[in-house]
Length: 233
Ligand code: C5P
Image 1 (cartoon, rainbow, N blue to C red):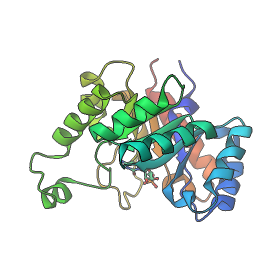
Image 2: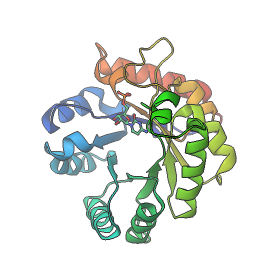
Image 3: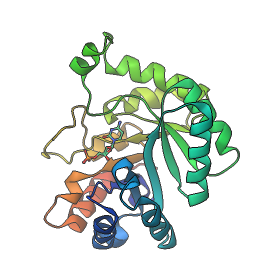
Image 4: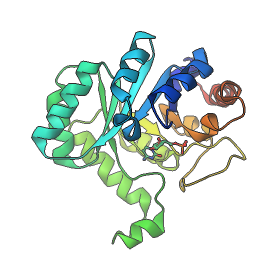
């Protein structure tokens, strides 16, 4: 059975890089994967990433690139030079193609964000999409993989459908994870750690349930236990 820590990523959604460093210290060995998001990009993210890499951690760069081909290619090349292990682009075919081309044979994985887990059917309706989140996730995911993405980001509610749809090597990343009984906050398509793993998610992204816990390390450990209970490989 694999190490549950390979399947849990802490979203370092903190006010700045120093607070992120304190949080990374606090959770210690319980967390191997750290996610650095766009808020930290403008608040010390680059030096934080270097420190995390030096400490032997895996870094998920969640800047969700979405731009013209050349700009995406430059951003992806820069991220790879920083040594990140995983990065996000939006699931838009030319964007994914440009990212995959810039990645070349680097080991960094490129995952495509399908539909944010903070959006539900009514948000999509308001944007003119009437077939539901799952159908949109499905078509964006298939197109992104065909365009060269290593995997996709979606809610765990779509993980099973994606696991059946995509080839077994596709890396499925799922935010919107809430321990049983946890508060949803602004997330709308949520799942528990155990069901996300059972449905085939490779990496669970968890922020506030750990960041805002009285004891973040204990909160991480109890999520790791939930992950362990569902791991069969
Ligand atoms: O605090 P919480 O566990 O809701 O944090 C989830 C993290 O995952 C946030 O950093 C958010 O930006 C990110 N994310 C998401 N939905 C996506 C992609 C990323 O919630 N589809």
